Length: 248
Image (cartoon, rainbow, N blue to C red; front, side):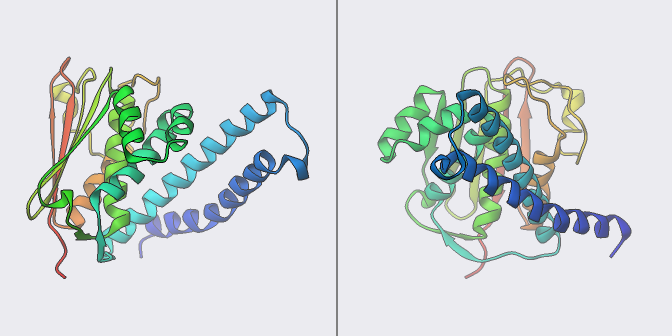
């Protein structure tokens, strides 16, 4: 094991515990006010902000862990229904990008209600092919992570709409498209480079470290899949992932 990987392993180990304690403690302060004392609205908003950022940090660590597992060839074989995994990934992405919308989203229990809310927020889902109703054999965590990162990226950079298309009769095909400003041709070569800071600002006024897309590429390549990018300035961006199923 090289020094760089040893350092990353140490950071993951030493940060996971404290972050878990932080999120648990803040959740207790917010949800158990009868035990810990009433909060003012300003205090609650401040704690909500701290909790969101602690959750982002935890998500970042989970991404690192999953990438390392992929690069080490650790892949679980699960029977998963893509619609369920997609719903979870969308909720994860919304919680990251738009916490207020997330609260509205989780308050609705029926699939139809959630679908209509997503449409009203400019998020459109299209599922056809074999995996509309049949299970896909693969590692659930990895598929969910791929979807979450692609959807989060699209939500950050869209103007009004995000379209998520799931298809395929053998391989699973995922296409996530936004109607944002697009990626200049000269910058497209850098999109998947790990920790390359992007100066493209999204509609939520947030720039990134370029880790999410590099995560997707690392995982996709580790499972013998492919990822392509189609983008044009002023016309949005579409990422397409193709993943073969694991053998039963």
